[in-house]
Image (cartoon, rainbow, N blue to C red; front, side, top):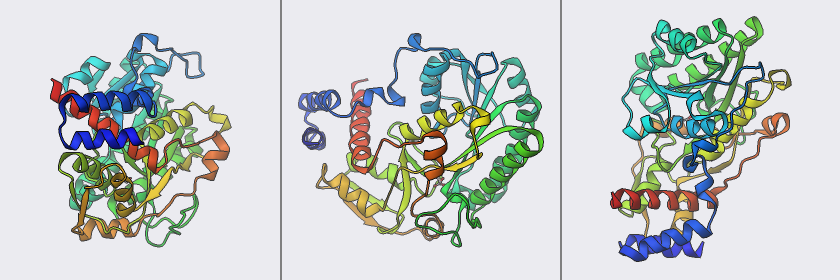
Amino acid sequence: MMLLVQMMRGTAMHAGSRWSRSVERLISSGRDINSSAHHFSGFGEACTLSCGHGDQTKVLITGGLGQLGIGLAKLLRRRFGKNNVILSDIRKPPSHVYDDGPFIFSDILDFKNLREIVVNNNISWLIHYSAVLSAVGENNIALAKEVNITGFHNILDVATEHGLRVFVPSTIGAFGPSSPRDPTPELCVQRPQTIYGVSKVHAELMGEYYHHRYGLDFRCLRYPGILSADSQPGGGTTDYAVQLFHAALKTGHFECYLRGDTQLPMMYIDDCVRATLEFLEVPTDSLPSRTYNINAMAFTPQELTQEIQKVLPDLKVTYNVDPLRQAIADGWPKALEDSSARRDWGWKHEYNLPELVQTMLALITQGKQMAEAC
Ligand code: SER
């Protein structure tokens, strides 16, 4: 931790070569951030595994250019081989995405396009990350309905038609003010008050129904807010936490749109993508449930600020509450109860708040340093 403190102070002063030496020391002495999902290297070493039906696992990730897709693709490519994991989106990616492995256009609202991709590439796992998040959804309900509900129906249909294993993330947003909030159990009242939450409850129920009715291998994890250093979330309520890190290193000041005492469940991206892979690898007959809560930590903006201030004591956070996002957060869990995932398939998080802060600051600093060097 001492090294991190020194490094960040050096960073704030833009201390040139001392900065780079500090970063190197931190990276070589601290948590092994180079082993994280974001920093796997050498796809040549990738092992190739089968999906249990004697066939090579071939994965399609939709919404691949959001916060999670690239990180998950890196982990899956290491597991299954570079060319067996296809990232897709409707947007054009930065060029390094093309360099890292297959990337294709895929529009989840176009069923024929989806079917063609699944058939032509012999897809066996479909990981469905396309979604409109909570805050954006409230500002464009028609879009949220189309992407999160109509699009999801296409996913269900193509997965059922071709016998795919299908993973869809759900969220803390699938609960609402009438749910028990601290902690929120897996099975309880779910009456969300956002279109995002309603669409995710719909996905949970439809997926479980298709599993029951057609034998679809549907799997769903309720993710907390996810923090990542090199990809930004977009349009969510938990996004402040990622923004705070970037602002802390860039300007030393952050204006937070949530009240300082708003506690939400959170998770570092490496835990999130590892949970997803571990859950997907459980043999289908060994899974007693199809939808699980997963949890790692829970904190408020004040607690996150205090932890970052141990490294960057000059960080200043002010509050300018956005009523829309505050109302959303006030109806969400303060913590998730995840004992079923821990019992049924061995879920175990690795990152608590201090490790999260150390890792995020180190990786963002490293990224800035590399960008400056280019
Ligand atoms: N991160 C999401 C949001 O804030 C919650 O799952 O909308």
